[in-house]
Length: 452
Image 1 (cartoon, rainbow, N blue to C red):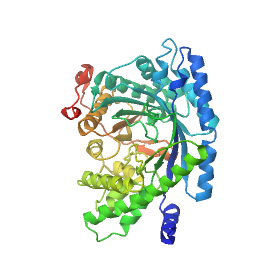
Image 2 (cartoon, one colour):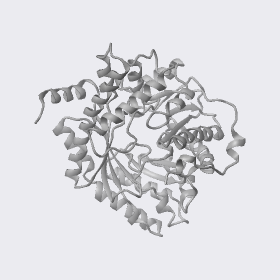
Image 3 (cartoon, rainbow, N blue to C red):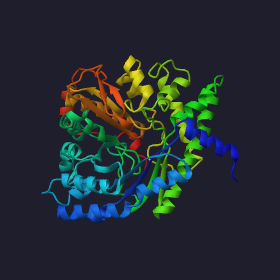
Image 4 (tube, one colour):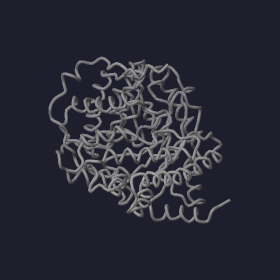
């Protein structure tokens, strides 16, 4: 039976507290598009994406109008392209990036993810070529996003891949220097990458997934903050309960949209990712939630504890609302996309070192962090290595999305616009890790990998 109070509460969440569905993402397997002729393979890729996703955007818009629930993005994720590129070693993988970009433009989605390689234990045919081509691919396309998985709890960390990604990030920034180094914002380096993540830039369609699925990512930091604003005298346990109840309501909206999109598109429902994904809009901020718990400013001592509470409570509330929770699911802390994080970084309350500590208990990692343009490849690689180590040892997903702001120094600002926001250039430790990074090899998997 419909509960009038529930309906009114959901309307309030949408109209006053920035509740939205951040993305409907269609995952499409391209394994049947493999061909030794790159042009033929690209033709198959384009045709399959256009065939499967031709109604994706319209369906999202129809659901948005009928239910009154904002659906911000409609996106596509595909099989890691390195798997296809390996079948045609004499051709540049950038051809696949062009095909993905054309298909995304044809069906009207804003981003397509999967220009990716999984190299946590070594490089297979196609991996080196794809990774080396990432700067060109991201600088010559508008909608293609890329990710590389360099480590896992089972495999350890591929330090040769880590070193390579330091160089690749820097090249992405240099090639898009006239566009706020935006190429680097479309590239994520993972440890323990999930195969069903609907959020960009790290989305790809894992080989363990079906031929085509619908995954939905919800949002709602503003809703959680509004609920806590009313909880002025609550203790910590009561705050956790409030977050759980609120996360349940948010996830229930996501479940509704996911099932409706699945039914209308005649595509299996995959998962709901219940992550609190912030935006630059004032109020729609994870940092503000932490401050509502009692911190003067995000980044103060106690921030990691508050974030741990938030992340755990979001997961506990969400799993009661849907039987198919996946992706990343928790709290995101992207600096340039979160108004409160931006403020905290600008005033010096939030540093990269503090953010690294926070990533041990959040859903992702060092996300959308702007660093000085002259940051060396080795320092970028070492930041990736540190973050991958946190993920590997703690059996959790961690990720790095760094943007070297070419021509800018610590304290300057870099403006992206839209959901990507803007961010202050944050200080990095200047002492060199070059000798460590140059050693190469693989950090062995931790003892907790031996679970069989």
